[in-house]
Each structure stands twice: as C-alpha cells, then as structure tokens.
Image (cartoon, rainbow, N blue to C red; front, side, top):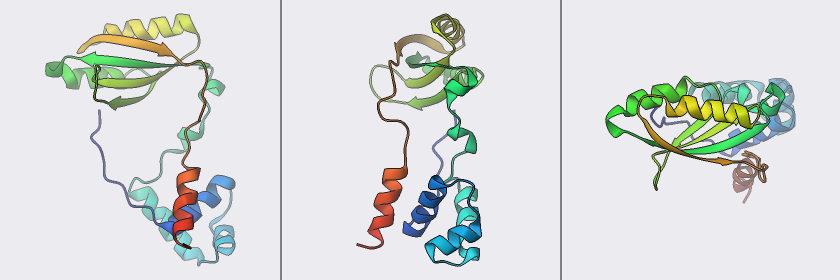
Length: 165
C-alpha cells in the first residue's frame, strides 16, 4: 500500500481549468485559454504542473466499472496481522477487482471497494482475499446503489468562486 503522497495545491485558476475540462474533456488548450481568458502557455504549464505533481488522477478513473462487466460493488472491512501488513498490502494490490483501499480507524484496519460480476464472483473474490497472507478477517457489505457518485466538481466550483469573492 502506498504512503500518502503530497500533491500540488490547486488554486482558483487551476480549478477553473479543471472545471472546463470536466465539462468538455476533449477541449484543446487553446480553446481553454480563450474560454478562460488566459494565455495558452499558462494553461499548458498549469496542466503539466498538476499532472507531474500528482494532482490529477489517472484517466481510467472515468471508466464506469459496469461497462467492464462489474455490475456489483461491495465494501469490505479488512482486519490484518500487523506483523504481515506488507504481505497483506501486496496481496490486496494483486487482486484486480479491489479497486480502492483505505487504511482506517475503527474495528477494521482497512476498507476496500471491490467490484464483481455477480454475487458468485464476489464470493470467489472474498475467498481469494481470506486466503491471502496477512488477512485475518473480513466483513462485507454489498452496495444497493450509488447515491452520490464520486465527484470533485462541487469542490472545484467552490474554489473557482473563491477567487472572485
């Protein structure tokens, strides 16, 4: 499991650029510059900085997992053996259906977002997980539906407005 990395701070102009890209991901830097009233080189430099500093997630984050055939989402609380934590982290990274893992406080050590094709597939994945080194116990909750999808647009809009306030 990777450590928390330090990313670039996004300022109001960055937020305006990212909001415009969210609205039209295929727009060019020149079109962005015209829309936002800034120089094209400024847009290019800002995007390069955000990408190189880790502020931009991979484009694959935009892919709907159901389009890949994974219509079931589950959340698994995972308790690990602290002595085997590195082995547990490596085992989690090796399971493609585990799309996100967070270290947490509370009863479990980790919280994983898992996708599966159906309940039988989820059962298979859970079995692989429980057979992995360092994994002590799990507790699974199946998602019935996404109420608020992952989003950053409202935060970007808030930051964009802060430049004009």
